[in-house]
Length: 90
Image (cartoon, rainbow, N blue to C red; front, side, top):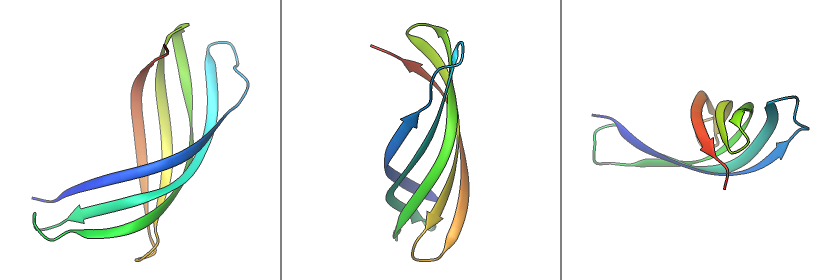
């Protein structure tokens, strides 16, 4: 079985809210480690950039939708990542 780990540190810029939606862009760096045979890890540095939107259903709860392009520095490969989540603002 293939397994992997992804670590990212990003800077995020939130645009002005439009009604209940808050769009944003992000970018950063990180590490991607993949174990294709379950034991030997292949680790590489990455750069990523993307954007998304938070849709607030209450002032403290939002659904988030995000798309990222991830570029692996060592092998010059690109991957596309879609995230969907729920956020709680404290």
